[in-house]
Length: 455
Image (cartoon, rainbow, N blue to C red; front, side, top):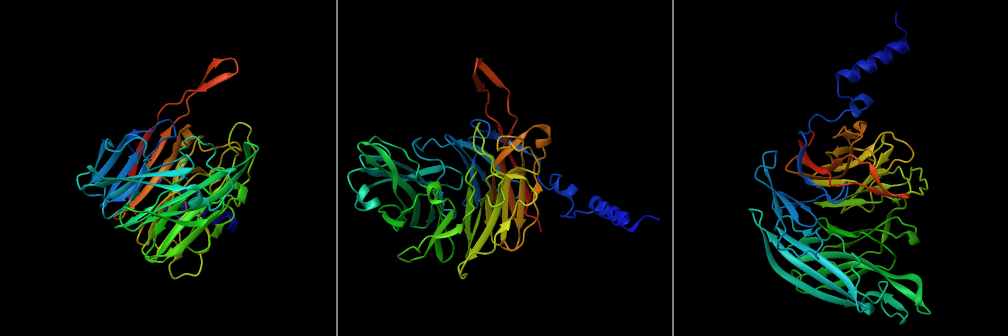
């Protein structure tokens, strides 16, 4: 006779082997077989650097890679469409290659900004994608904003930027286009001098540039005066949302503000989380109908360690919450990456009540593990608007072979999950001279896979 405890353990093992039970580690550590085989579509610029950014546009997928190419998928998106690589020959190189996109109208806004002679110079190139994937340039707009408009009254010891010379500060984020109504988020800072030398950072300002006439004229809407970075704007049915991580000098954290559609003013900035990760901190925000969804790198449970050879080591979590237009606050936070020791920046896509989040990570590794070490791609889904979630499932299974998979980009369209990621192996370093070593890293393949959204 088998003892009761042994028999229960045996039954559990048999159940894990026979059915897809989310609680079984065997199932969780095997790649999900529903994904198509990986197809190489292009190469990165350098190892994990230079992947693609995904956009919905005219009920198709556009994957843009800086600086010279984009991929256009058309036809039946359910796995039978075609990918076509095409250079962005009509978009000058000075423009950023992470445009603001009008999903239904096909318009794209490529932006450029820099500071010169104490003025913020802004350029916007408007293009439209046709049904056959061609880009047509519509217009190029330019406007300037002076230091007083940005910061208010300041002394002569305050400079916009860090020097008097031209600076490309990269202070614009991803905006939103809804017909002729456009929002382009910004954040930037000045430098305070004393006796001709830099004395302190600041003042700071952040907010949006707002146009109601397709970019012909813009007005500045200021939201905060604290240090911030990487801003973005998304729009639900009734509200425009502004998100930004607050700067390290201000305690970091993830902040937001919102404004009613058609309203005149933004709400006082509020803190979404105090535990936004400091080393690998990234977030993703998306609005669908009357709900805004946000996920971010969270350091609440990490074991941060100082690293003399590079960025500090953090084993962060992927955390999610949402807010409906009618809600008075945010939903309870959900740790999507529970069970993984290391996780890296997420990508998220929403379609109706269906949500998918993907990221790179690993269940167990040494204490010096980082994003460029061996990781695999994981994903989770929700089919009820973020109320409940699946446990993390693997897409790739190459970390055990010494292969790194990273920088995933995911997009959900017509019930199909589309995924891009970079994959490769670190090459051996090459000694140039005593005490000087060069990392011999070249481009890595960028792969594409898809699967139906799980029922």
